[in-house]
Length: 364
Image (tube, rainbow, N blue to C red):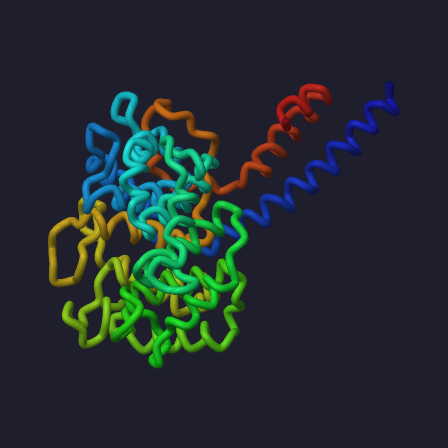
């Protein structure tokens, strides 16, 4: 019995050491998100709850805004099922609109990113084959291109990669070939580049395996930084038809691209600008000069502040069954420990109680 006890103690110390390593690693990972960013995101999530509609969608500009809102929830570690209106959630809403969303290549790609983060089947989401919808547009407008425009093509590559589809080298080459002399990409694929399309294209190329230090992506980085304003924010396009003032959506997109490229200091500067756009309500405004709460801006800013990109949209904390209601959302900071560390906590507790079988059950 004494030997048994000693063995249990040794096992307990081994698990404790592993737990401490996991906790230390978790702390280092979460340290990358400044506390002010987490606090701002939590406040924004509380406001976002007021924007949810009876059908489970979020106010904004169509179904795409609900996808952006879903990205924000996942970035904050929220279970989308906890944002429910009766039996309707953002997920059930998007399932009901999947066929319509899939009619646009970019929309299909963006939704496909979301379905994969949710652990859902992108080939049968709401009865719609999003992968097939994207593939059906291949080469229609240009060799190697999905859909009619550059931004749709970039989102298609991101969505297909998220779904585990092997990307066609011709499709990746096509996106690279659309880079302008300035180093950016333009919405339609021709003309003066803009920050939004460039940010999405950069992330698509990174997802496709193009290295951040490659010539095209270093040129893209130089272009993005050339668009930065003195306040640290970014406009859609310097000197363009929308003006040169920094706006929330463009800055959020660029911050994500900078994060993905490893330009952390530049991304942090963009995030600091985003923080000054938050209203007392918790929502973000579109520009400094515009005082109104802006739903679309808020959704995108949350993801950028929490350091997620279109490449690493976080998955749901647990599988989400359509129509499931799981109470009210958390409004505090995201959990500071990964699920593996939480499992180890349960294991350690059981060892302390001296019941190895119970420890295994809790860890499983």
